[in-house]
Amino acid sequence: MKLQLVSAGSGARWVRLGIQTFFRQPLALMGLFLLFMALMSVATLVPLVGLPVAMTLLPAVTLGLMAATREATNGKFPLPLILLTGFRAGPVKRRAMLVLGGLYASGFLIALGVSWLVDDGGFANLYLGGHVPDKGLLESGAFMAAMWTFVGLHLPLSLLFWHAPALVYWQDIAPLKALFFSAVACLRNFWALTVFALVWIGVMVGMVLALTSLASLLNSPTLAGTLLFPMLLLLAAMFFTSLFFTYRDSFEQAVPTVPAAATD
Image (cartoon, rainbow, N blue to C red; front, side, top):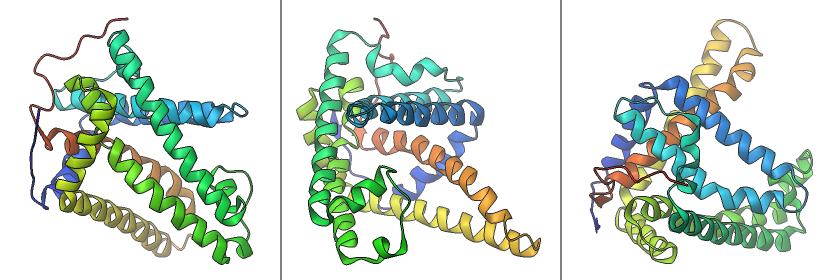
């Protein structure tokens, strides 16, 4: 396993590959993304332990979406069980995925906890869907400070875990080493990931403008609001599809020729 340096323009290519691959198997990939969202939502509904459990599962289920993208690139139809890929590759990788998930959950809860201290839980409650936001809360300085505190802490956490699940699964790397290599790969390919993020932001903004323009042309003020949520889900599914390519191009022989065995 060796790190590959890519050009900044690779970020735009990753977005294009993600969109193209999504449309090779749109029903399967959209269905898997909705199943992923449902699993996370149901897990968070469990009192007290729901959020930690959901965050613990997140790295492994994200790997499942990457494995589904790999199947789609090979012309195959990914089945629902592929979401559990990280837990079906034997006890060693299962433990590694759980360790990785536990580390991510700990980091996420610490970031959310620190933000809670900044504004007495205003941002954290809103983030977790605890209450409907009011204008005064959204405009308060403490709320903004808490939001940026969380973003500032969560960004490095995301870089640590960006490639880590894939490295654990496809490269047999221990969780802590996978976090280190993930962070190094993200920093070395910083500009490619920056372009990747900016292009996705541009795609989202373009979609919102297109919906707004369509609603205006059809003289239907509610049309944009009606279509916005399903279109955002569609873009989110494409975004997760594109993650596989950020990993594949960042490491030599990133994915073994022979798929890892899926055994219980």
